[in-house]
Length: 482
Ligand code: F0G
Image 1: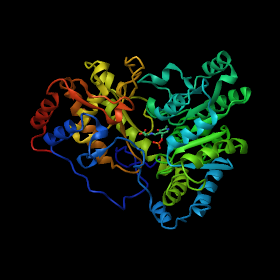
Image 2: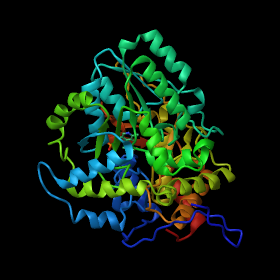
Image 3: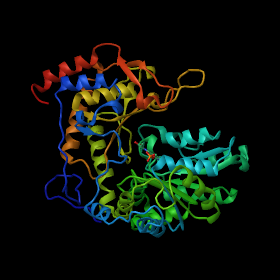
Image 4: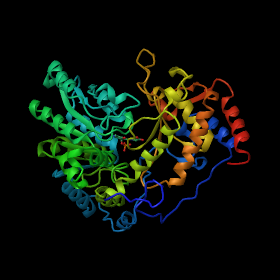
């Protein structure tokens, strides 16, 4: 697709789709927003969606479906066993990834559970470019450990590196040598590396990782949940691939891997998940776990309607016009914020815009959860719901001490094909205002801290009345505006 140029000096990303089903949104007055975030214990997970104007919590399960996906859902073949819907999905995956076997699961973390049950043993280590929370949790519960083989640049907030998700090959090799091949369960590469800001790996890097895996006889497992963004970035940023089709890049990536798993809440614009496997022996090692934890092998906990939608959604992922929309909107938003001196992760990645709370609210110590305070402030300023990705999302050590996160980010996700550019402009506007008022924001402390997954259910409170003061300033600056 060649870029569409404007006659005037406008330079905006242009959607190649139109909206045909809409959902009414509400924007509460700022005073009501303060009440809602207080009721939610300053945890954006606990906000009611009806009180949210722009839901930028996640892209998971909230991407917009196409007309073709919706139509396909009506023709789904409901059967416990042997559904033709499943066969269609399996054939589509085989066509794209050239892997013969497919195990369905109800979502991404279920696929991770099955892989860890089948491929990891107690005491073994999983090498990876970077961890994702749910995969780490499954490995740890198996008694395994993780080792992140990532260059320090990956977690630098500002960078020009187009492939911050790349694995550090030297480190990977050294880990295998020092730990011993038999103590490594598998190597995991994550596309569109979520926790460092949706950053991609290059095809060249993946190929080198594959060479290491072949040399040592280790399985290479790809987390393809955020593959769509990674495909787009390879096409745009990797010289070798600039004239390749998305389908060709997909085939080249898949060719490196032994296992590809994904959350279809992200990949394929629907809801579900699964594991593609190259070798029959590995398929056999995993399938019993699917039957035990997920469901029969032709649905794995997914509704057949969703499976039809995923099949079409995977095909749509091969369409550059579709997959470019979200990263282009993200880039537009990142550029606008950078221009105004607002600290964000660069280069722009996939999934969403990541504000750097460590700089945005540099006066708040990490022990008072700056990214969580910023998330609450962002909701107060514009009814925008983001997700804390910092210390609060970490787990306490067994001795009760608290590990401080590498990065304190507020993630503002841009689910695919959902928001309009004027809504993105609105979000930019409110963040610019908030940045001017940043000194008013202060820290949070626990009221109720759950032992596991505290970021989902935990409740906090501010040290003073900063939320009310922020709302007062809003009234002064915006008058009777919502
Ligand atoms: N892998 C990656 C890279 C993910 O981003 C996620 C989910 C999963 C696996 C687990 O998939 O949710 O279907 O069980 N990420 C969501 C997010 C939760 O908001 O980033 P799941």
